[in-house]
Length: 591
Image 1 (tube, one colour):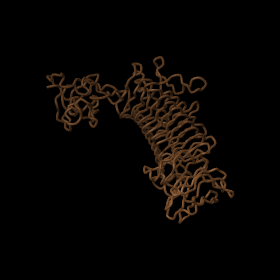
Image 2 (cartoon, one colour; image 1 turned 120 degrees about the vertical axis):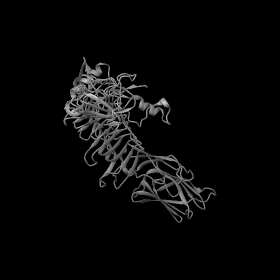
Image 3 (cartoon, helix red, strand yellow; image 1 turned 90 degrees about the vertical axis):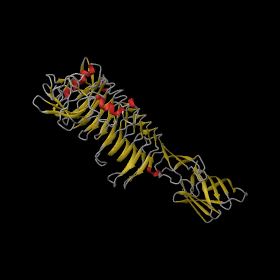
Image 4 (cartoon, one colour; image 1 turned 180 degrees about the vertical axis):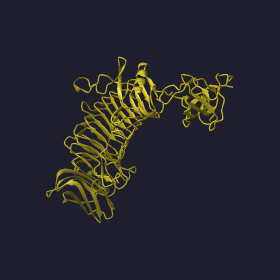
């Protein structure tokens, strides 16, 4: 008979507060019953243990056995501390290795809840820590983390439960605080977790260390530390991190809505925030450099409650080369806002839903942003309100789009992009579309120093060839439009209204016109198809047409007549003598 040492083997059994279960007892029974099962004091299975087995003054006993057991642990007064099903380590492994799928020793069955202590990280009781949430555990956690850091760092994985934190827990370098199954609850006004440093063997809070003359440069930094999983609740602030630098991360943390603020990080270079659920506002500020925020869910209480999901802010510095991608933002007034200078920041592949404003910026300049491939929905829970996905007051040399704008419900957009102040310069907004469905460019409210680039076309080259157009912004978007390819959609001159009636073609253009005609030099290239095919190409200004060519394409027939007129402030072209029942293709542009 091959025996294994049972969890916890030469075991020290603990009270929930982490102290040894002195002079308690442990019993072993058939699962679901109180029928005793035998365990042994030696690995040869010669000497059976008493059942229940008394623990010594250190809360220890030696237990050898094989199989699965109901284990009941009691204190010296007979109170039950633990009543769980446990197995020797080989039970789970044998089950996995005999499974018909998989490759033997290739891994662990991810669907099995392995007994604690058999596989994976070992739970580390926090000395004097109370996981019932009754007494303050701030000092207990700080002592355990200090000892772990002074011994070279590593993982502190407390026994699951609720720990009351009235002060703050300080996280130094090279520490993983694994809070799986753990809730840290504050006193309603404190900060639960802070960055810290070991200085002369002492764990020190560095949150307020700003260096010389408030430059924003703290004198100590934290590297290689992670806050992993767990729930933070009932505090003014969940995480306060100053100089949480490269190798540091917030990973899988649940920030409850009973926090006033989820996190506030400053001067943190290379911080990663991922897989968190965020129910309270979050702030990254003062040198948000190389920070990556991805695969998180930011949740608010409603789009009309003045809630902001993520603020990129700062007093002493801005945001440079941050990457915000693959997050969800839901039920917020504003999802992401820039309240500082920023440059080279990426906002990509995020999902925005039931948010009035998706990405905004104030009076401080942001430059060289890339906002693209985001899903920006208009589906407010309060349909009477409207959505503005992108709204900046001071943005330069940035790339916007393409993004996916879609309505879902009865709410809509009041604008898609707003960049219409004199501080918005050199930005390019990309819009993709099918030539059969042109976008409403009045929804892009941009100033004259910015451009919209439209890319359209069809896979059917006999209907429409791909083309690109660049439009200069002037709110109404009426200046400088360039076609790069000929358009072949019948009776659909781009950005014009085309009517073909009998032998008369009327084309109402986008080109401004006065009582004296157009002040711009314009060009046209038209093909009239019917019983006879005509080519008309040339330039026009005021009410004068200059033909480069106007002739029947195949037989050299005499060309058609074109007249120009003012139609409500825009230029109208009228072509007379066209073949009945035909169509017109081509383009018109301002030069």
